[in-house]
Amino acid sequence: MSMETQKFPLDLPNPYTELDPLINFLRGAQSQAVEIDCGGVKIMPSRGLQLLLSAEQQWRSEGLGFAVKNIGESCRKSLTLLGLEPARFEDEETA
Image (cartoon, rainbow, N blue to C red; front, top):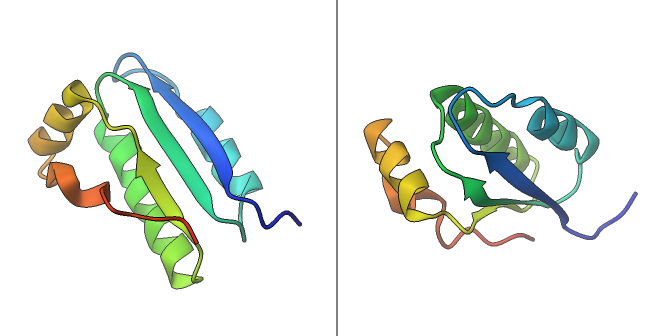
C-alpha cells in the first residue's frame, strides 16, 4: 500500500457529467491520503458535493489527509448556491 498522497483531477464541465471516475478513484484510494484537483470543475453538482463531503468525513475519521484544491471561481459560485461556504475546503492539508 502506497503512503503517497493519491491525486485525482476532477473534470466536471457541466452538472450532468458522470461521477463514476471520482467514485472509482475514492474506492481505490481508501486508507491513503487523497487530493482532489477541481481545476476542471465548471459547476459542482449537488451529488458531487455530497460525495466530496461524505468522503472527507470518512477520510478524516480514519485520520487520513483529504484535500480539495484548485477551486475556480465558477466552482466557488456553485458551492455558494448549494449552501456551502466557498472557503470550506481551503487550508485542508493532506497528511
